Structure formats: structure tokens, C-alpha cells
Length: 58
Length: 401
Image (cartoon, rainbow over all chains, first blue to last red; front, top):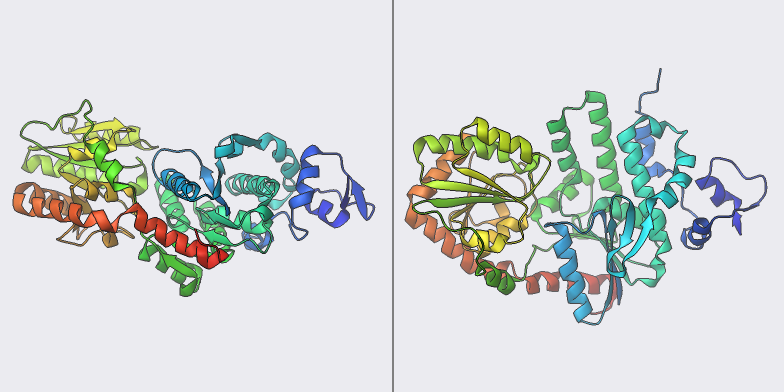
């Protein structure tokens, strides 16, 4: 099914090459109907200050 | 109405929030409402009453593909908690949350998860039963993690808890202590938080007290009991050292430790090390707690942090002389000197003195027992508790329960 590219890029690391992306996934087909358009991963409101404190690997 | 009762924690589980969720669900169903019970399990999230499972293995690859390459992956505890939380969000999204009149979650993590995926028009009642930040602090203290990870974990859970509380349409909790934590440490406006002390079905509890089990009151001895999770924050180590001191003064008592938990083996070993095996018995998890409390003289709750443990409520209904630590939510559960006793100094010596006093002073002990039993009937009634909760449901939905 077709999903909005913006929402796709919230859940997958590969940015879409088109405005809409065709994704075959039984679970995704269910999720897309019910996830709000503003949903993002990760939850930056909680995590942004935390992630900045995580020590980087040397 | 259609209501979702949800928690990030595992269901079903013995004691604690699960029986409370079930009772609320039954009370609502009796009034003709539809209720779903949603929670965690190791391998799946599930809608318990519908026996519907959502396997985590179906969602995990999708989430890992996105999060594995991020900085988050360098902190395994936070990373795995986040994965679990996002899986909860994706599963909740599949439940058609728009069909619910109200979502009533039992913890701040579930609050944040539900808020991120629910439609704006569905009210969210967040009902934490403890201070997540406080529990994590105690857990970290008892595990001795290195400082940098410690501070990061504390910050993460604090932000998660604040976000979960802020996401609520309204917050309800059972103690004034917890309300003050939310106001002072998380910046939640006071008017957004209601306080409704717990209630339990008292007559069924009393009926179960009369069902005999394999235990008898030991001849010539008083029974001291603790019931709860065998974990650090319950302060059992302080109690064991207090009992060691007590044993040097008098020997007319035994102590029953009822429950299970991560520290049970360590406490059993400590009991042996202190030479208390003839006095202290670990009964493990039990289904006959009402009967055991019926045989108890003095119930003890030496917690380092606790909101409003059901074991203290049950002990008062059973007519025990209840002794609690001065920590957190416990002092507001008893009327000091009337329905229970608050140990002034939360140390082994402080507990030893108090237990010795109550074992020695029969008149005081009996006064506490009788008054606790008398006041418990109204104060801890399930009808009063549900009425409080349903009043909040009405305020949020405009629909009467």
C-alpha cells in the first residue's frame, strides 16, 4: 500500500525517493491506519537531552 | 462506555496493581461498560480479557532497523527500555484507540506511550501507583552501577515520568505524598491531580481469613508478619537486623516473611547468618494471605519507599497492630497511636524498640488492633474507592458510570 513518504522516513532509516512509498508489510498496513501523522521515532521530547549525554565509543 | 485499562508492566501478576485493575474492570462490566485490560509480557503485549497477543518479534525488527545506528544504542538499558516502550506504542495504535471513551493507564510510561498514539479527543487518565524516579534511584543504589550510567538512567526515567504525567488529561493517585512528588519534582499543577486512597472488597477478605490453612498460631508466641515483594526498597534488611536485636531481648515471637522477589535468597542467607532461622520463616508467595494475617499479631512494613501498599490495608482490616516506617506514603496510612504506629527512627534499633514495646504492652497492642479494624471498614472500602474513580471518569468523559 502507499504511505506518505514523511511518515515512512520516521520509521525507516532510508529516506524515500518519492512522495509516496510502496511498502509490503502486514503489520505496517495495520499501523499506518492508526498511527497519528505526527508520530516520530525516537521520542525526542524525552530523549534529546539524554542522548547528548551518552558517551561515544572510542 | 468503552474503557481501556493499560499498563507498561506485566499482567497478570501476583499482588499490586493487577488485582486493582481486575476489580475495576469487573465493577465497570457489572454496570454494563466494555473494558479491555492491556499490558506487557516477556514475549508479547496483550489484551488480557480477549486473549489477544501481539508478539514483540513482529515489531522489533522494524524498530531496530531505525534505532540501531543511533547514539541510543550505546546505552543498552535505555535502548532496550525504549524498544519495549515503542513496541507498546505500535501495538496500542493497532487497538483502534478512537473507539474508546477513555484510556486509564496505571503508570507514567504507559501514559507517554498512549499519549503519543491516541487520537486527541480520547481523554487519558494517568494513575501511577508509585514514584518511578524514586524506585529507580533505590534500584540503582542497591545495584551499584558506575556513576555516569547512574546519572544517565536517573535522568532518563525522570524525563520519562515527567513526560508521561504531562501527557495526561488528568492524573489520579492514591496518596498525598505521591501528589506532592508530582507537583514538586515534576512541575505538575496541583489542580490536575486527584487523590483517591485505595479500597479493597472487605467482606470477601474477611471470609478468606476464616479459611484454615496449614499454619497455626505458635503456642506462647506472637506472630510478626511482612507481606510484599522481597526487594531492596521494602527495607527487609533493616527488619532482619532489628529482629536480631529483638531476639537478644525476648524470644516470645516468630516472624513470617510472605512473598517473593529478587532479594529473597539474600535475605534467607542473612537470616541464617544472623542466627534467626528458629524465628524467621520465608513462606514464599501465598494465595492465603487473609488467613495468615488472621493469625498475625503485629504487621510490619519497613519500606524505604512505598506509596500505599495493599498489605498494610489488609493488615488493618485483619485487625493487626500495624507498624510502618516513616517513609514516603506510609505515615498517611495510619493514625499514629490509634490505628497503627509510625517508627520514629527507621533503623534496626528503632524497629527493635518499637516491636519490643508492642510485644510487651498488651493493652497498646490490642488498642491498635481494634481501632485499625474498626476504621478500616469505611476508610478502605472498595465502594468508596470506585466511587472516587468513577467521579473522575465522569469529569473526563461527561458520561456517568
